Image (cartoon, rainbow, N blue to C red; front, side):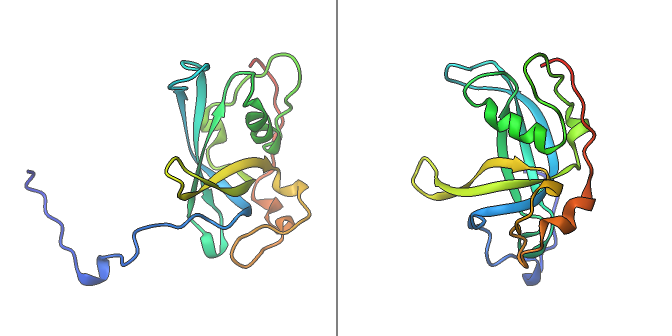
Length: 165
């Protein structure tokens, strides 16, 4: 055991340490963290993917996190990566595409489409089912107060890039 101690008052303790899934809907999010990993198992084992942590930008659910994986290879799940990169203003077309680095992506804003699915144990969890550029959406997004997406378009303007994928 370490010699490190923490002075904890009753007000420091949280009464509710569990998070219920966010309601299904569209959320303005910022890319909080991106990590290059590889697929652990299945037919794509060993192939590269991004493990992405998104942070809800504002409203009732501000600072809540959403997590998703993005395959960095063409195939069955590529639609999600295509949606992600296009929402950030990158042109994804037949040919080669240079994948932006985690540093290139960090802090950028986009709209995440979120639904609720059952996890392996049958408990509800969030699933990011797609992405949209904040400036392209005319509907309202869920931010607690249902802020129109148009007001979030100023968060970040994408700079399209192309390259090798």
